[in-house]
Image (cartoon, rainbow, N blue to C red; front, side, top):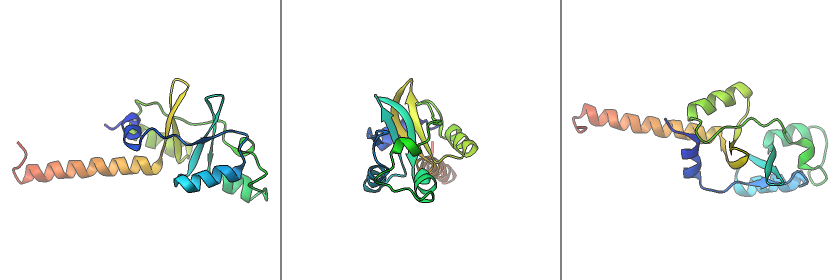
Length: 145
C-alpha cells in the first residue's frame, strides 16, 4: 500500500508557501507559476493555514474584494485537515472525500513536509492498478515465476 511519504518522495522536496501577510494576488500568481491549486500558509515556521483556488473564488472574487489588497490571512482556511507521512493513499482519499477538501498538507509532528492533491492520489492509484494489471498479464502468459 502506497504511503503519503512515498508520494512526497516522488514529487520532490519543494513545498510552496506564503505568509499570512502576503496578498492574495501574490499567492494566486505563485499558484499559476507553479501550476498548483493550493499553497501552505506558514508563519514562524509553522503551518498556519491553507489557501486554495476555492478560497479565492468564494472569499475574494465572489465577495468583490481585490486580490492586491486582500491578505491571505484574511481568507485562508485555518482549520486545516492534514495527513501524516505514514498515511496510505486510501486513507487520504477517504479523509479528503469526507472533509470535502482537494489538498492535504502532510505534517510530521509540527513540520510541513508537503501537500498532496486529489490528482496526486488518483495518479498513484492508477499507477498501482497498471502495475497489478501487468503482473496479472505476465502470470496469464506464464512469464511470472
